[in-house]
Length: 311
Image (cartoon, rainbow, N blue to C red; front, side):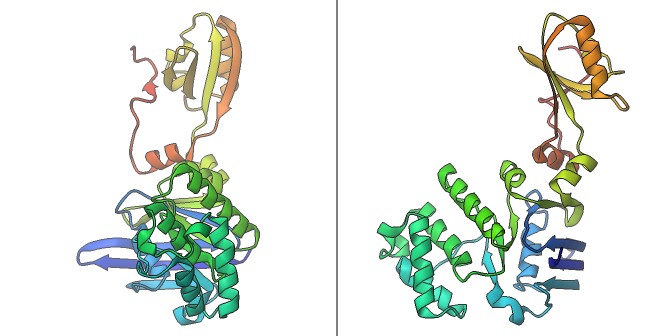
């Protein structure tokens, strides 16, 4: 596939702080790519360099086949983390104005504005000033402004911030439709469930460095450890033996466990069947959330205990 975005050796420092360090990244055209990381990891700095708001100290950025920001400016949509729109303008008036700034003819701009205004249930607000809108509706207007000029790529910094669950689903559905039409989408978000549902590939950045990247499947295979969940009737305690299980979590209905190194999940099933009546056996992929926590050195001790430690 063709790369829509390529970063090579990109670095940025502020005084003594290295916000981004020798960063390499490739985003395939027509994909949804998730940029993940804790607060202060360098995500926003990276996005601002991609958008040419700030310049890297070193490295190169190819976006839509060009290193010249002027040649690609109208081909990109950008939703920054810090929102800001002309509050005294009316909704439709603002959207048409912003589209025209991106070289969209007035008639086409109005047609597109009306389409998205209706899609985002803003028809009754179309002639209201932005300052009269709720925070969520103002967020809708900003999202529409990002996609209204039909860009080839959009870059979204925390796009779900300020939305309720209904509108989060609406925005996710729109993003999937845009991807189906060939748009490339780079997003930064803390919503791990959303990342898992939306993104084709991800990159985790921590303290300005790339920790991992790849497709969701590749990341899970390379960095994740499958958990085994067994539901049974009876009494057994084989999962407390560290020879078989490295960590486990008990509930009233089942036990979730991480196999010890070199132990095949089928061995755990064999041990369980020898003692109890098994009603369910499931191998569970690690979530992006868990991989994220483990990659940045965060543990969730309340979730899973070490085998052999009594309650």
